[in-house]
Length: 169
Image 1 (spheres, rainbow, N blue to C red):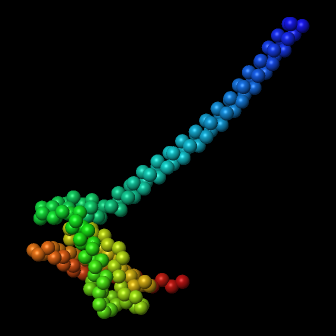
Image 2: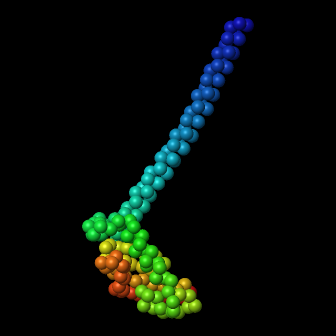
Image 3: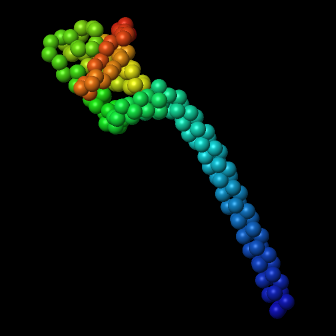
């Protein structure tokens, strides 16, 4: 009887070990599959980040912030470039507050009840600015040159302009 008891215990132990092995193997395989899926996602996201960084770098090319020559031009004249860039932007946006129907820089009259306003400004370098304008329905872009005189006043000069045709649906 004692030998049968040991035999049953041995068989039970072997079955328990086999069960533990199979269960552990299934859990391990499941975790490996999950890790592989996450590694694929990580690779995909890293590729997306690289692509977005490249696109961002390309978009920042024509921008005074990344143009060392343009910044150096102003620094040689003794200007703090961070403050100067903010002042140039502010001065352009201040021109949105005007009397009458004609914007001081935009050569188009509003064709709606709204005034023409400059929406977005990008300072390209130490001489040029591109800006977007709209009256709510019609919109376009202007290319400006700017300069600082001896009294540190900003002067804007319209170089080129265009108005997009209205989109009809």
